[in-house]
Image (tube, rainbow, N blue to C red; front, side, top):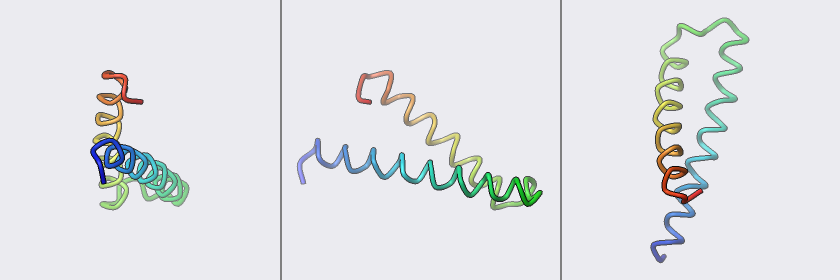
Length: 62
């Protein structure tokens, strides 16, 4: 796998994971479980994903 292909794969996985966790957070929120450890872990992950995607965007990679 060359470098560009690896980047594209990583980016797709990151975006897919971010979307998946957002859906899980919405389900937990609808169930009133916003203070659960799982919800908070997803929230922390989403913050990391947002930062990573913002950096990619800053450098014109997405």
